[in-house]
Length: 311
Image (cartoon, rainbow, N blue to C red; front, side):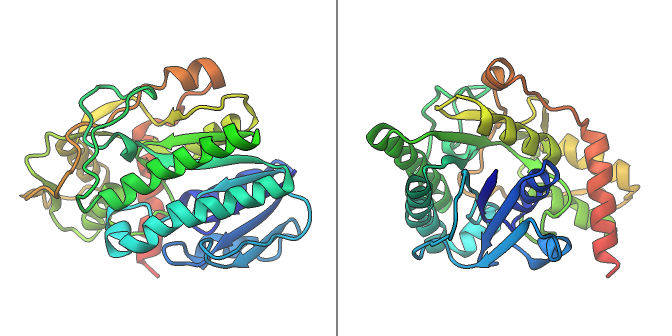
């Protein structure tokens, strides 16, 4: 297959490039490096099966030659990045999705949208099933990301219904691993960076809010299985093992042997109190569930960040 990946130099996008190349495919990646990094794809520079286009996906996209699948992963995705780039976030969710769908339609390619657990907002249902419509504040600071992804889902299914396109939607829950940007504001790089510097870990609120963490290789494998499936409606991919942020911080300190402890600060506006995927659909429709334990994944991630910080 010849696969087009927007956001291909991002955290998840670059791992998708690696996965599909390793499975014998040709990959065309596009990124404008607003949050992605050339370092994430530097190792692919001399791979004859890899092409890179530096471009903003909110402008007209032209990819010469046949395309079998389009994976739309371009977007600021961490709280820090979408709060730093609120208008760009909404444009990539709207114009970028429209352009990527246009490529897929023109090439008669299957389309897969990267959506997010943020479409559920601060959920009132636990765990969150795909049938849950969410509890989102559309005018809060996080709304730029939440509503961009909700719009992107609606647009994707509009193309499916109107044009008969083959479309797939993945709702991604908290994912971590190598190539997370150390300064992107996500909880894993925040905590690991602080721990490796010997600083106390900054926990918002009292730390009772929960998250579940999926290692990136598990997520990528699930995305590949979703792409080749016949499931047209959204599918949650994430790790259902829920734990509090306070307990998570304590685990990071233990794995890094950081003695600085934890400090508590005010919680951000609209910070979800609980976040945990119901992955019944992924298990039954895709035969997928996460395999990497939290400690094993964190050890790999800590080793990556430790090496990066020594540069």
